[in-house]
Image (cartoon, rainbow, N blue to C red; front, side):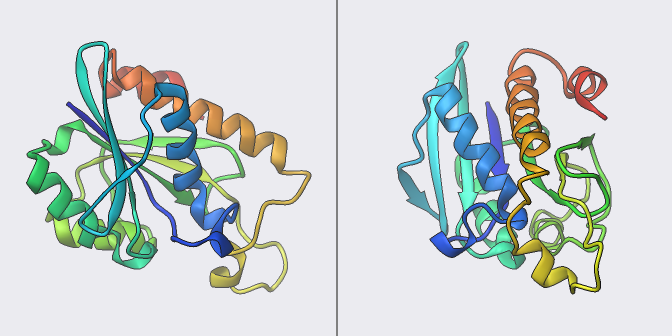
Length: 186
């Protein structure tokens, strides 16, 4: 069993923003695995399917970013999904746009969605794909920056990062996350 979660904010006004890159990865993974996101439970939208004989869940919490754990904790409990079978994809200010940093544990690093997950799961030890969105280069406040869209100059790197994120998730269906990290970090 595997669960792939993308963090973001619900609503069309957040579509395509830096903070919603986790949603974009899950939407692309949904298309790639032919697992439509059509069901709702625990303040989230999800889909289930079977890939290579393994049950796969795709989840987008609809609680708004800062409350993501309110969806994820109960969802995992209800479906009895082991923590080691979960991967979360989210935006990372400290990485250049489109670059990936895969980890098996770590602090929230100031990311409120991850803080909420840690609070609801009771641990920092869960697999993650940190997707680089960069930092503001002007004096723009971070909350405004993460709710902006990527520039045209960044779009090629972002599309490449989305493709690599999807491939990393798909690779985790066939191999250990350590091997996925070795292949996709950087």
